[in-house]
Image (cartoon, rainbow, N blue to C red; front, side, top):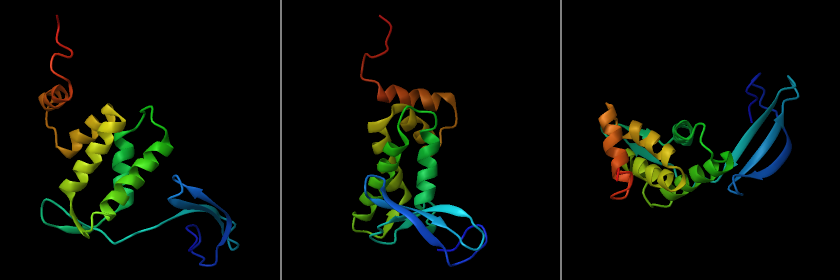
Length: 156
């Protein structure tokens, strides 16, 4: 593993332990050349996924991009970081097990929204506002009103 500080390719593993509910291995590494310490994660990847954007453009699936968007939606929410990691790993496993290497961004977005809806409503609405490209407050109002059961929140 190349050292991110000095580029040395001869780094040493100092500690390994399971992470993300045993679906990844967390490794603490040390670079003897510069003394730098850093962490890497090793995960099983069943297949290389390609995302088909709505424009038709194709790009490699990026777990980090998925993780960033979910973490932004869940920012300052009362959900443990480990729970978010498990959710992300579950989404990736679900995508990999679909049997297809080409997956539309719409399918990914729907799976993320479905998962977020079960975990945190505010995170779900935040993600949906970007995913569905809300342009004004009425878009939020309409979306949130669809979440409420009939009669909930109506003044008596």
